[in-house]
Amino acid sequence: MTTLLSKKQIVIISFVLIAAIIRLFPHLPNMTPITAMALFSGVYFTDKKYAFTVPLLAMFLSDLFLGFSTISIFVYLAFILVGFIGIKSKKISVTSVLISSISFFIITNFGVWLIGYPKTMNGLLECYTLAIPFFRNSLIGDFLFSAILYFGFEFVSKKYLKTA
Image (cartoon, rainbow, N blue to C red; front, side):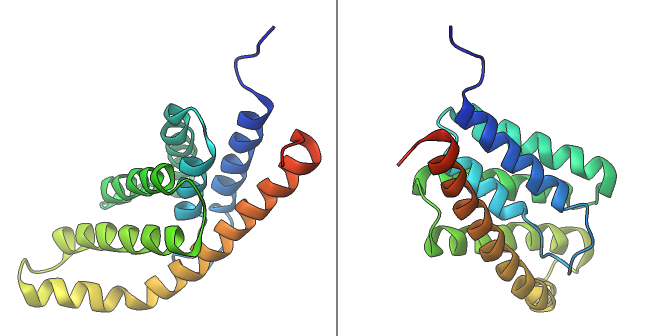
């Protein structure tokens, strides 16, 4: 008898939900597991429909508590792209985390520029320049949470899922 979800899928879903819950705790600006959660899902879900639906649903549920903002659509678009980066890279690595972080930064700050800055080259440059301190926090969070998700999953897989 096969179950609807495998043990591996249940573990991955659990990791994603825990990451979404971590967003609800106080943290430094932009130091959240969002990018890591999307990348992790893209890498580890073998059924790619889950690679997008599970983290998007987890993100949406946590946003119900945190609130939505005017740039939420750009955050979700960036989130989807990061999931796709995970699918294509097939692993969590320094390169995949860095590409994901940069992509998230570019897309979300483009949204900030569209909504809150003059639609000029100077406005665009000002927007991205003022976002640099937040990018530092994003990078720290992305690498930290990617490592936690990666090593946590590897540990659980070897101990409880009996994978190599």
